[in-house]
Length: 238
Image (cartoon, rainbow, N blue to C red; front, side, top):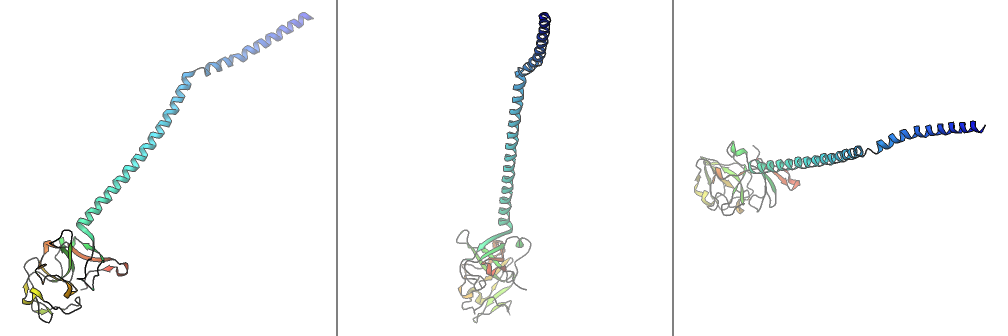
């Protein structure tokens, strides 16, 4: 009996032994796979490369966006400069020579392109340089056009080619006709200008301003943008 038990024991032991051996084989395979360190290192390296690639892509996207915004701002700046130089410019009125039409501190938009295609017209408000100071300009109203003779008599009446000028921009009678008393004949591309505040204006009646050559004219006032309560067109009614 014991021998059988021994056999059984042996069998049992054998079975246990086989079972252990079988159970160890996959373990050994598992250990072998776990011990394959180079593959794990490659996976880690791949993960690091993916993270690095993501960071690089994100950095490139940010750089591209910054470059795009910079180019946009540069384009806006260049267009603004072009508009100011060739199309329109904001101008601030200083002084009282154009009252009551314009007051000190009024902000205007000056159209700088129209006169490249046509001549100034009567009663338009024009801007031209003050010859004695840089970056300073006169703003006056066109009264006489090229080829016309402008005269102002002792009563303050303005004549164009001996015909009284019908206008209501000057709110007071002219006291001093200046050089226009004897008549001033305008040459080609010459203009006679007056301020609307006739007795408080330096204009074409006096040598300090004189006759205005067309190539000196910067542009025409087309709109008052400030104060907001007086916002509107400065183009004369025809």
